[in-house]
Length: 512
Image (tube, rainbow, N blue to C red; front, side, top):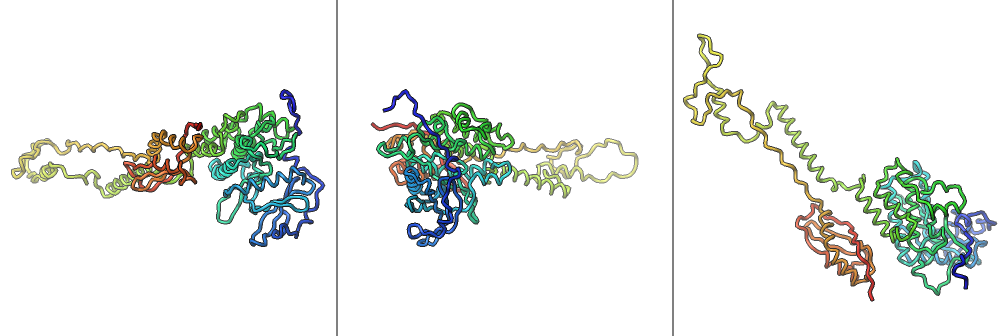
């Protein structure tokens, strides 16, 4: 047994090393071959130092697939075990943003994976097509948040990716569909150290560390055990690169590997606001990404799902051009009322009529009209400048004699009443849900007792009835408990059905 005080000596092997040129077997030797009696290799699509990727036709299903074939000169016991583990990890997770695997096996002393064939560049190449090699923040989140959810599904199956970077995220382009980010290449995947079976053999040879230096976590750089929070760090660097058009440690570009590792372990990254000052990235979103770049894994979001939810919450609180028209309904009502008043005033002005004349007639209006309609003054001696107006014998006692018409002040307009603002129904229900945390906590304690954040889908119909369920687990004991705890009715129903996700922050407890 080694001395605990003695540091193990590691030989660092980066992914770039695996992509180095080797004495390759010509890829044309594989064209036309049949694998596993069903896959006929048709064309070479690309590859690196470790494996080649071919287009093949599946004769049984009548579809095209991708065949990832380990190069014969790289087919050591470790690499074959790694490829089998990659296939198993991907096959255990069904997610639209994770590449699908159809099978794996051996071929002439090497190994292969049959997987989904996707049309599109990887994220790094996709960014090179964009101005400044970056995406607007709302477009970046729309594209990549589903990829975070796919990685969370991988973590939930007990695996850590260990090589998240733009080169391992494909941007699939399908006719009539928006771009779709798909996580590919689980070649460095390994069981989470917190969940790994101690009796299981390691897939990495003793004395080697595999990583991509620019996207390695501080734990990887320091040659320490990694868990899912290491992937959170690497995804944060990927998001930083997508938003800023450059990595957070720009000074390390083109430098030796140990310089990258020194930055990851010891130096703070450049703030997003400084790296992309003209990109108009909301401060809330920048803070979430920077929190995921913390040196200590305990200071980062503790899961990929928590990271995605924090980004979604920050985006919801930021100005977004993609918000629904319903979000702006109070302003729309005020503007519509203002336009109606302006239109009525304009019509009245064109017709020569004071708009205030359309209001109810005042009680003295007929009397005033009779005062104006007095008999003509006969000709004769000069008329005094201020004659005395005699009361009309036929007028009613309510007449107002001896008050010149010109001096009668116009009636004042009644003050405009402010338009009441209808409360946001989602804000109202969120405040109600916040008061029900104890009931949700009780349900969580009864179910598992180890939940820190619980996402619940909330639905409100036009009658104001509120229902809620755990996404994907509605029929579980936890889902049924929450449905009972959160079911109620709103005093003021919304104008249309609503549905949104509410995240409860809970206190994890453990059962004896």
